Image (tube, rainbow, N blue to C red; front, side, top):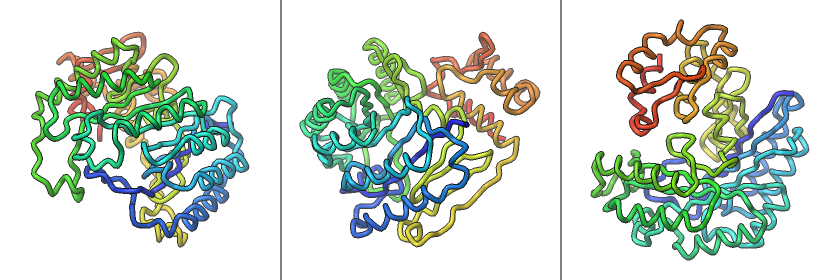
Length: 367
């Protein structure tokens, strides 16, 4: 059997944050049960499920913890009925503070979920208000402690830097507070102001590029000193606690996405579900893209080089039946000559000091 990751999209939110451009909504609550009926129907209809063993599940959003726990439990039960589940399966649910209590966490844990990803974003009350978050630092602390009491020993925190009026000192305080909680995994994302978000319509005093780079370097140094190794541009983990599900994306492994706007990568093909919740509920079919070999080779390099371990030359040749230098030799040589890329023990990787500015390097591999 082949290993498979599963992503489940839950597009419901209590309130849209000012920076959010995800496929999520705060005004569709009357469709919650109908949506989960359609979601469960989609899972049941997946063809070829018997050929896979599911070793990661990720329930994201939106805010999965904002819907009734019984709907999450229905999804977990359906996946268990339709697929073989690995005994060591990593099963994550995204939770926002103030949307779930101890009883909710207890029910998640009883359903088989064993990892929680919590959106702290900032430990500064003013920054949380500016972001449009519905929680306080105290709410987060209560939720974190509830998750621990419910038996979760693998918790990830999301943090954001480069916020309006944020200084390196303020960011340092958020990092310090986050580390005090002792989560197993921390993600640090730079704020990007996307079109059609509330932030895009505001006049914001954002840190300049040099200050954002200082904040990123500060995070790398601080977190590594506190036991969190950087294994991807924005992700840091204690030993044995990398996000196995996200690693599937970066390694171009197979995964199935269920829910409105969810994507799948199966047998070399991309599938994208209808993003509209109402159209998804009504049964709109997914769009399928059969990618070329060149596209897949580019993606394999582009995604793999985001990680600190980079790309194994043997993995490339086994997957594509070609040596990596026969396809990307000139690009590799160019970046080696400027000191951005290194090769060691059969692996190709971006040097640590270039990871923050890696986009300009990664774009070279897009054909």
